[in-house]
Image (cartoon, rainbow, N blue to C red; front, side, top):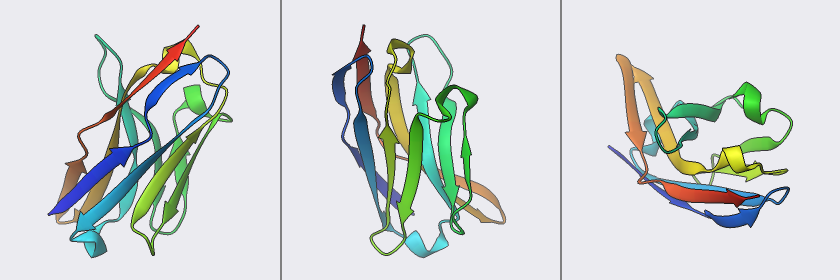
Amino acid sequence: QVQLVESGGGLVQAGGSLRLSCAASGSIGSINVMGWYRQAPGKQRELVAVIRIGGSTNYADSVKGRFTVSRDNAKNTVSLQMNSLKPEDTAVYYCNAAVLSVGRMDFWGKGTLVTVSS
């Protein structure tokens, strides 16, 4: 089992920045991929950014060039630096850890709310 705790959400004006962090505990040695998803009101949860244990990353097209995901394997944390925030970035952001052994097992944090005002 993996436990994830997010921090860093809040209210920010459009054009501003926020940094989200997620600390992992438990069976952290089994984690292959960590990252961030978000869910806006009335919408499905969507991928924002992920980073693999080797350092390769993937981003949603909507955040490319504005968001940066990073991972500290020694501290078992993953962070999301969000710059040039837009009102449409408003959502609950969830930290995710994926274990890829026999199939895929996903673990989720409780989420942190990011609100971008116009």
